[in-house]
Image 1 (cartoon, rainbow, N blue to C red):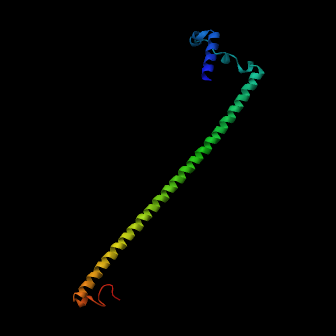
Image 2 (cartoon, rainbow, N blue to C red; image 1 turned 60 degrees about the vertical axis):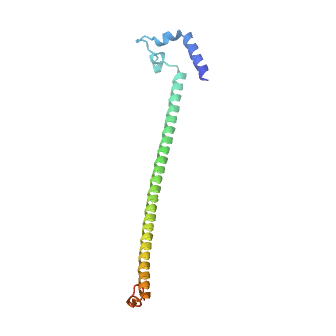
Image 3 (tube, rainbow, N blue to C red; image 1 turned 30 degrees about the vertical axis):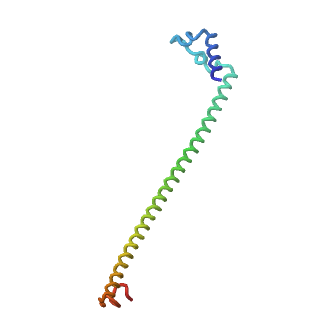
Length: 139
């Protein structure tokens, strides 16, 4: 399609006086469209210009609406992502706190068990003061 268009354009340019006349335009020459005032244009061309302008305005309006909708959707998505990341960070902080509390409880339990085993061993070894009511963990 591009090749045919280029060939057509090249043929049209050659028929109009060649490539040299297109590139070597005189500075005082004005394009034909600019030389013809809008009022001097035929009514069909003025109607076509109005129709084109109206269609361009409609397309621009629609593009602006789509762009606004896309910008809002992007902002909503980014806000949802930020909220998700904040919730995820809070959850991970809670998991770390729970693990730290569990580790602390495990260390306390291990310490209490070691003390109790030491008391039981001392009691069995004959240190009766460490047996009974005064002993740690007794009721």
